[in-house]
Image (cartoon, rainbow, N blue to C red; front, side, top):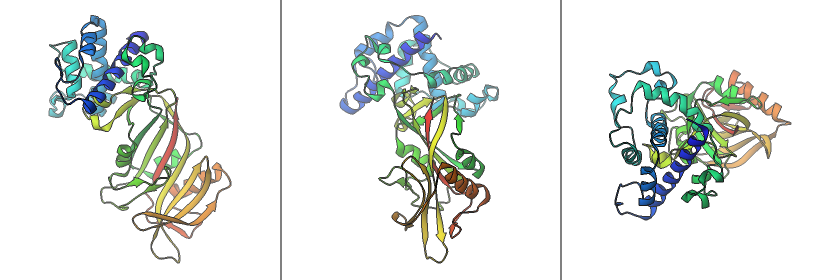
Amino acid sequence: MEDKLRKKLMAFLRVINYDIGEYSKNDWRKRDNYVTLNDDLYKKLKSLSKAEKQGMIDILVALTLLTAGNQEVIRNPEKFDPKDPGLNRDLFSQSTKDIVKILDPWYSGLATKKNYELAKKLLPILGSTYLEPEDFRGTPGESKFDDERIGGFKKLYRGLNDLESRIIAAALRPNVTWDIQRGVSTSTDKSLSTNEFAKSSEQMFTKEENIFVPVQFGDMDRNGSSILFIFDNPKGKGMIAQNLSYFASESEVILSGTATIKNWSLQFIAKLKGERGVFHVSINNLPNKTNIEVRGYDFKVGRIVEQHPLSSSTEAYIVGRTLVSRGVMNPDHIVPLSTNDFMLIAYATVE
């Protein structure tokens, strides 16, 4: 698919996604043609050329297979098994189903090996594409570029859990990069990614964005450590899935590129020698502070009871890496409750 055509179709889909969001908020009535679209967008879809219609279907197929299909098969389409009943369920959201029906009333066969091969090829391109105001010329999105649903989201989140300590240790390295070239699902909603990161809806951030509160530390659902990526996405890259996704409530954006971790906060629960109870500890490598903070903890983070300054990002890395890799904490009166139950908030820039 040519770059010009891809951008045109992605811009059109951002406008449709925006319209669906506004419709679901403001209008309970069923629209005349389809539940999803207003008459103007319906007519524009019908007027697309054959190549444009097929290109849009290809984009929607790739988007759907990543957000609702089998991600292992996307990584390796040779694993596709036509007998797997999970591959034959209806993966299209109602909105996407409506759009595809307009583009091709006889379309069928979403979950095929050919389509998984298509998704593997297309997702890295969709996830790294950014749009500019001229891409929306002549569309309803032209005057709405400042709305992130049109111009692209500048901050995105992705939570990972059940991780080995070595992965946390590697993420602490100065300016380490994470390859997401294949395309990954992120969210515009921090709370959703935090739940995935924490594996418990009762774990949350305080008003300070860099302090994470493990309300049920030791939850039986947890198995290993977690990372919450907070992506700085200055160009608004990505394929906005949101209302087009089968899981619309997850507010997904497909993102690809290279993420460089610039700052981080490594957090865990610990005991202090000679003290009763448990404490929330943060090793911070942040722009406004490089230190260790110990806070009171009784199912919520309390006031700071200790602070230990760190001289540089290098020292923060050494302290964090030594703890995660060897289980040794400096200062040694701080004793983690677990040697593989860390929570890393990683601030990364996507290029």
